[in-house]
Image (cartoon, rainbow, N blue to C red):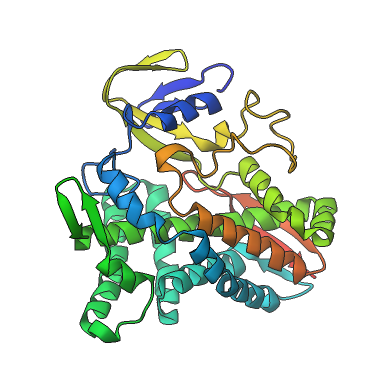
Length: 360
């Protein structure tokens, strides 16, 4: 598609963009390619445009500063070390269910300050959400989303009820944040709070879980690189960026045009639905030399795994921390990783639905 039809159209996806250059153009012109694609509910902050997006993004970004990431790293590492230690040795294990999903869940709960007893209900919710998404049943998807919103509402209300005795965590802190909008400064509404937290947590649960499966599978299929990174852990951050480029955990995002615009040699009318294909952009031969080859030493300047522009992934600093620590602890806590079977996830999910591995 990149070479023969870099801007394609169909009723389901609208206009799909496949080229790295075209997608970077979209990201650089949010005034033309709006993120406000849904009229059914708000999406904080990613489903907003400036100046509203700017105000809510300022609240978002205060939680992902280098200082906060440094403070959170020991907690993430402790979670990972325990999960790696608990992996059975010398026998086949399902990485997605018995490791990846648990890691995503526990890291999220630790970051947000959520109780351990919420782990099982949320794992069951993930399964329901995946099934509804694959069926493309809008009513069922909406009902499942409402259930998740109920969990967030209860967590927020418990902190309101506790008053000064509320736990001092991210969820409590969000209740007191103010948004500086053109019409004035105010605290967030319940709907805005739930949307922001949903954006963090649902994205976290799906993408971090997918990334864990991708990393385990990659290491197992590249034993020499597995050995090199065990001996040279300083190379892990670059390796993670390159693995994510090759196997992007998020396939697509949507936009809608605010005016007629030409992109990729094709004119898109005002009001056109646009699908930007991250996975294709990150394998674009015109953006990356030997694009399908793993080269951790290459420049990642055009890597769009976290997007770019004002809508760059809100949780990118946390994701980078989680994936670096994931690989560090996985390599440190094992002698070898072998994959026996993998099954690809079905769009819109990415990565693998199954990764059966033997850990030693």
